[in-house]
Image (cartoon, rainbow, N blue to C red; front, side, top):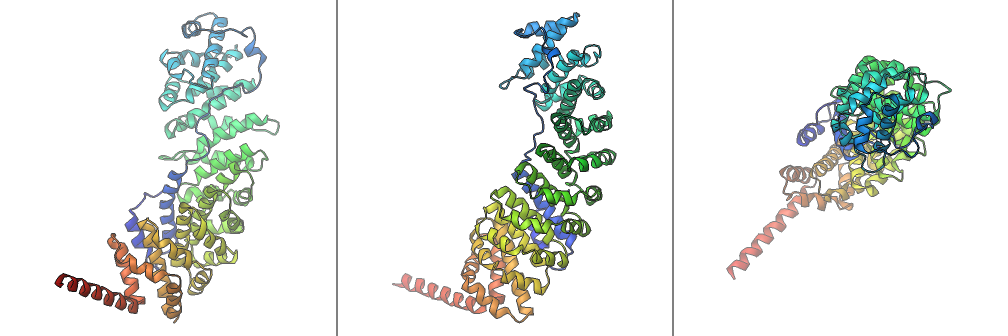
Length: 508
């Protein structure tokens, strides 16, 4: 993803009509950084196992009612008697599974991790393996420092080996632990990948797998797709993509959600990375999932498609062909402002394309809901809608600009000239200036000037000539001088009369 350039530089470039669609779209990618910062992913990075994955009577056998102190746990874990080791490890798991304030730090500082890792290798004692894996899962769900302690304790390779365990509960707990480790960041994610975890994870997926197990695998795969600087290696992505496409066909909303989040992470990068995802044919299903009534599915599917239309014109066209423009008008009017904002962001990327894309946008009747957002949306949503209009203006044909004006876009834009955001005041002034230039070429300048005046735009633009920001003041002055000269003359006369009046007052 490109670095975020200075707003002034981006705005300066924005004014030039000659620049190609890919450059306009790159500017939107830069803005998306702020969009992402504004709203964290709903998907959880790490999860602590508070209750047992699947009841396993053997793991509870003979220990009901047993409660050990921390000192007894430490002694028991380090004992040579397998029964004592099991009881102490289970007691450690139980206190680490408390909902409130589990003593993760105390267990780490007690030096128990190497011993718990050793228990992972006890193939003759699957109940001990299970309890150790569960305890390590919960430690790895803590801070990065605590996750690092698990990694440096040597847990990754034994956990990967447990993915081939004949005991499902043991295997599933290992999946969960690896998911927590991979979710910590790119460093540990790559440790898990280089330990050959992906082929073993993928081999676990079958039509008979319990749904809770499949959810955990999908979530862990999503964490293996997550994070950048660096992104996951191409080989790992190539291994996971066919399975993610398969998981997109599932009916369970949690599986769908995490599969979509995985694809959203993989499409945050370069056009080449976007191409990897587009080429496996995911777009028709993603667009279908954008119509979901379940927010945990709608949000990541919309995010993924929004990322894809930051790519090349061809990649964007594939999204259009898959039906994105038939779904976006409904999403622009979604009850949740977060969905409105993401939809407007995706739309702005389509509008950043060539005039053929803009025409398809018009044909899908997207302008009315866009204007509605400019009028009534939250401020953050309105800003995304302004970007859409800005891209439309710089990339559209003369006929398309006429349709834009006829959609009623000027009225809400004029009202937004009073917002306290300097960047967006400049963008709106640039849009108005651009439309006036186009109107002059079509000999429609007089009519457009009259419309702007009727909407109260002239008074607002005149007021902006005295704005404290130099760029705003100059842009407003340029519009008044070039398109409303009579207004400027009247303004000059009034200023002169005011000055004369002040002079007379001083004399008297």
